[in-house]
Image (cartoon, rainbow, N blue to C red; front, side, top):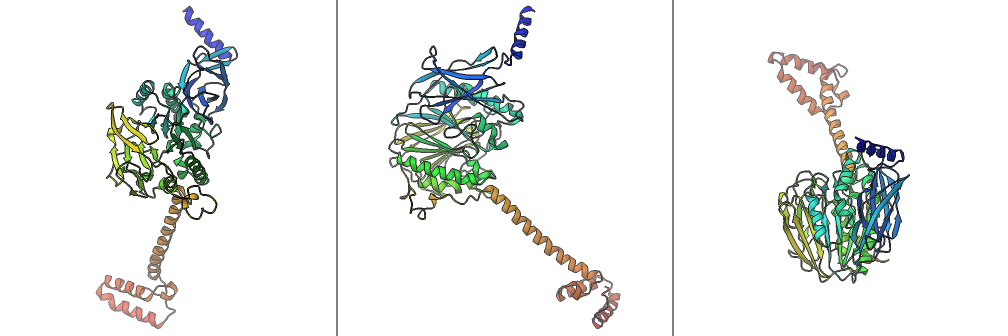
Length: 535
């Protein structure tokens, strides 16, 4: 009993000092910073303790230090580690491996993470670059996928992971406990390779507070602002763009054009740098096209295609090569397509963007089954794609390989080569210089008439039609009822034909023996306009 008593005394002492023995930094993950030589490290703690990161090129000599800044999750995150830390590791050299450790202290107590490491991507553009890409990964539904991702990252050399929306299912659920669970499960993966993200529809709750606080992406303050959830980064021969499809499905329409204007400027700059990064790849959660059975935006059913309407023309004009999306819990590869038209049934110098949907990493919800194939459908998998993710490899300036890997079957369910010898914009005035704005519509943001607007106007239109229908129905019914209950025809405002039809109908319902009596009363009514009509 003596050892147990000593342990209890130590725990009690740490508690009095404000630091528990278990309050160690956890949920560690890294991402790219604003500069090419910067990596951002993030982690969570139970209490407000001071933390910093030490780092260096060897585990024995981590002489550099970076102090963290702190943000706190909302009060309704009652079941989560609410204290989020963020630190920047700067002046890193491309191609080198760095070791780092999170160290925290409070009062006399100290707690450290394990020593971790990552490889800084080589800054040279003319090289092979590899990535893992997927969306819709849940803390429970993705249990088979986590070890497969860790094994892949450990055995192979990738530059980054791209998680294209829908994290944990959901980060805010159960007072934030689901978010903590998810971040713990990706820690061994995301602490050793930059974990890059884009927001999805499952992050919309609470103004995306958990997503904006738990992650930090380039080009934005932290916590990330609601109107700046898009960014770009150059890695090897690829210019990556992460955009938010959720701007089309929220109340604030201003963000539709804020993102569009930023995308236009970024793509113009990317086209000026095609000699360095010839590939332009865009990542967003909700697809523009799909062939699933459901009524999502990409199926075009019930006022759909808002993402397509808002961004497809821009991506086509500025020469985006590949668009990787998720949201549909399935896998689909499309032929090069623009404005519903397939431009070719191959991937050799395509004249339109190639779309890939990889949203089957494992969300815990049902598979989104496929419907009838569309003209743009090249390869589709629903149940066969459960627990799968993508591998994206830019072999060189002209050849790119995409593979969809099944965890359940331990095999590749699809792969294709994208060959592009003619990188660049697909319109002449792609710079959108002064004087050209009236020549091409993609130089200006389309009217942000998105889902919420249509829902409001659609509801108002339905109510108006319903009100008009009820009005005329009631007017018609009132006319007959009024005429039935002691009304003068001219006072009732009934038309003569309606009154005559009604009278005949009433007459023939009565006994034939009373026909003369009714006829006599009608004659009396005709002789005296002031007489009440009693029928």
